[in-house]
Image (cartoon, rainbow, N blue to C red; front, top):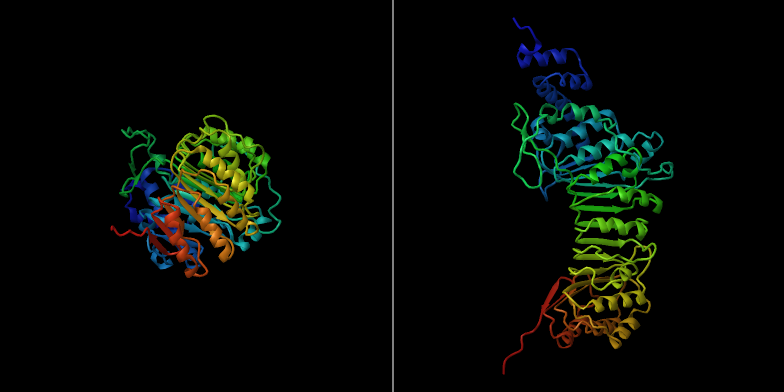
Length: 499
C-alpha cells in the first residue's frame, strides 16, 4: 500500500490535483515540494495557459513566428504543451490591451519556456491599452515582469515600443531605483517556482572562454537549460521601461554582460534624468549604440562613450548636440561607422584629427524637425577632408531645396580635397529635382576625384532621359569611378575599344 502521494502513479496524482479544483497558484506551490511534482505541476499549468495563448493569437495580439520570413502561427497551431515547452521561435510579438493575471502569466510562461527565441517585440502602441491602464496604474509590474523574463532569454533581441496616449500617463517620473533582491511582479512566483535552476544548485564546469555554464537537463523532459547569458540587443523606444517600477529590471537587462547593441529613442526623458541613468549603464561588449530623439547633454554622453571603447557603430541621426562637442583623447578608438546630423558630426570630426583611426563610413542625415543647413554641411565635409586618410563611405541626405543649387555650384568652384571618399551615397532628395539642380549636382560630384562608386539607389529620377547623358559625363570627370547606381539600374564604366 502506498505510504506517500509520490508512491502513486502519475495518473492518480493528476486526478487528485484536478479533483481538488486547484488554482494555478496552488498547483505552482505544490510543484515546489519536490522534483517529481515539479515536472507534473509544470505541465498542468502550461495546459491551462494554452487556451489563453490561443485566444491572444486569434485576436492578433500575440504573433509567433517559427522561422524568418514565415507567417505568424495560427491559434489552432498552438496544439500542445510540447509546442511551447520545446519550441524554438524566430520572433514573438505581444500587443497588450489589458493585463489580466491569466494573460500576463500565460505570455510570461511562453517566453520563459520557449527554447531559443531570436526576437521579442512588446508593442505598447494600442490606445485602448494605454487609456484602460493609465488610470489604474497596473501596467508597471506586468511590464517589469516581461522585461525580466525576456532578459533571461539567451542572446535574444528585445524591442519595446510605444508612447503614452493622452495626458493620463504624465504623472510618472522615471527615477532610477536600486535593483531589488527579489523582483516584485505578477510572474514572480511563477518564474521562481518553475525555474530549472531551483533543482540544480551546483555549478558546472565549462571550458568555454566566455564563462557560460554548460547546459542542464530538466528531469524526464529531454529539454536542456543552459545558464542564460542575457540579451544581445535591446531597443527601447518608449518611456515606460524607465518608470520607477520597471527601471530596476530594465537596468538588469541592459547590464546583463552580453549586450552588443543598445538603441534609445522616444524615451521622453529629461537631460537631468540621463545624467543619473547613464552612469549606471555598463556593457563591456557593447559595439553598436543608437540614440534618437533623446535630449542627452554631451557632457553626460561623453563619459558613457569613453567607458565603452568597443563601440564600432554610433548612430546619432535623430539627436541634437546639447552643449559643447569636445571629445576627449582616446575617444571611441574602434569606431568604424558614424551617423548623425551635420550639427553633431561637425564637432566630433573637427576636434582632433587623430581620433577614429578606423573610421570607414560617415552618414550625414537630417534631423526630423529641421533641414540640414548648407553652411554646416560644407564645414563638416571640410573637416572630413582634413582627415585625409583611410577609405570612407560617405552618405548624405539632402532635404533643404532652398539654395542647394547655389551650394553645389559654390562647392564645385571652391573644392576641398575629399580623396578619402571611395563610395558616395545620396540617401535621398526630399524634393523634386529640377534640370538645373541636376546639372549642378553632377558637377559637384567631381569634387570627389577618387570616388569608385556613386550610389543613387534611393533617388528616383523624375525623367530617366534627364540623367543618362549626365551620367556619361561623370566617367570623364571621375577617372576612378567604376559603378553608378540610379534607382534600380546599375551602370558600369564603359570599356573603351583598343585602337
